[in-house]
Length: 364
Image (cartoon, rainbow, N blue to C red; front, side, top):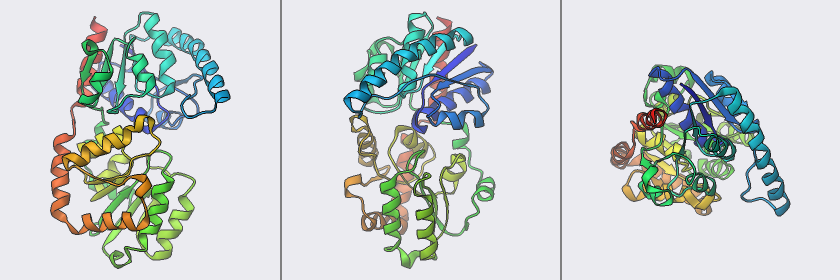
């Protein structure tokens, strides 16, 4: 079976696609999987490392842009149909799977009009405009949250959960400590803000260190900063004498999760799927400019269930973040309760459910 997995732009869109590719390949269903994205998206760096071929098309986002830039984006969107037609002609897939992001729209619509089976994965509780539109055309929609079903035709929408990569569920501490040489005896806080980092989290963490000086001998950090803040954050840890590893980007997320006693991160759907499947207590700081404010909806759902704590970006400060860290560091029972609830919420079989749906579409 030949498969195209289209979309990306961010890790939140891309990594579920990689999870599906791993499952298709691991079960011997398909060894002919091609990713489609843009040269500017995270997929351009990550997919070659994962060993899959990738083809590029022209596409740009529309939301949050000036009128003139929106006109340009719409023109580029039209060009993406030409690119999509060319890619579909060369690959001749049996199915096209859209994982979200503006790079998925043109090729999914083109595949639909060519009679090729199509499916989209919707990771968020509140779908974006593109997926809501695509939901009218594709053959199936796989959603993460029950709330999302209302946005799509009910007869072709399935509650599967958000696919996560197989290695995320595998805990190999020996490998983790060889990649990230931290102290096994210290409380480890894993901080990341998405594939490009998060400036507000980085700056607040720098401020928080000043309120955590009495815990320097007890806690340590693994911090993904993105490129912009790498030097500044590294200097802050070093200057105040905290132990930790600071890197611009982490490819080995499974090993990073395995070390973490506490995670501080944004609230993208894929991140939440990973931390709940691994049962990690978390402080969630939703990205305030996410489409339809979906990250706050995602985070609030987990907080209401008792699976995480939430700090809104507008309330974020060094003192507030330090207070949340200190509270969870001291309260082991609260962390255990969060782990228990998170593990119940996490759907570790989501990838299998999506692959079953893919197989049913190709058989039809």
